[in-house]
Length: 102
Image (cartoon, rainbow, N blue to C red; front, top):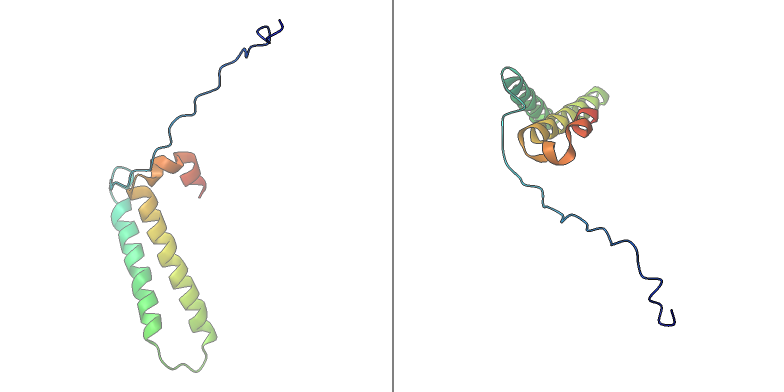
C-alpha cells in the first residue's frame, strides 16, 4: 500500500481506429438509368447558360441579366456538386443520410 499498488488503473485506454484517407474513385452505381444523362445534361445546360451570359457586352437593363448570371452560376455549381457526390466515393465517406440531407 505504501507504493500505490492498490490504486492501479482499472480500465484500459480505448484504441482509436486509424484514420483513413477517403478514396477518390469514380462509380456510376448510384446514378443509373435515366438519372445520369439528366444530371449531365442539366450541368451542361447550366454551363452553357453561364457562358452565354458572360458573352453579353452591353445591356440597357442589366438587373435581369445579373439575376440570370447568379442563377445559372448557382445551378452549374450545384449540379456539379451533385454529380461529384453521387459519382465518386465521397458518397460513402459522407454517408447516405448526410448526402440525402444535403
